Image (cartoon, rainbow, N blue to C red; front, side):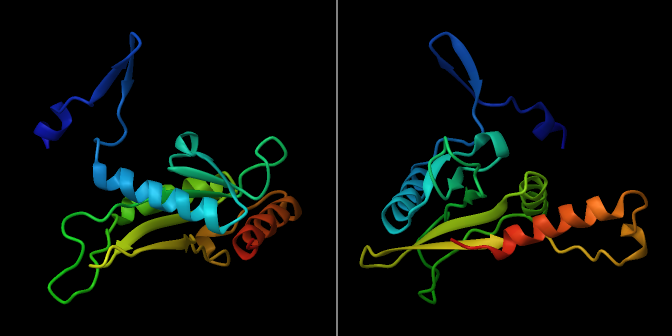
Length: 169
């Protein structure tokens, strides 16, 4: 679309510096992100930090940030529209496959688990947080994925990366 290409990126002016806004301001997103942050803070021993460097909303650490690297990136998807459909079931956001593939590939390249989270609210005000682990499946035996070169080093890297998805805190 020519119209989409000519749409300017929204910016914000803070203290004389101009910043591009990655998301449009949204009270629904802010409420969901806070509910997820509160859930992680109260119900786990995880340390939470900003994930903008890796294209996610939060980075998760299983200890103090000064002592270790993050093991996962979490992206928040806010429900849009009403809290439930005509059948009484919550409306969950549906991210695009393109968006998910880019996110998962980025997390895999950084050797982090890719997580997505959303919030479901019932009519009585009860908040439920849903967190899902995403994995990029790759068939390594396929002819297109056969690599030449240092196979022992590559295998050790692949085993280390696959071990990330299996470990849970």
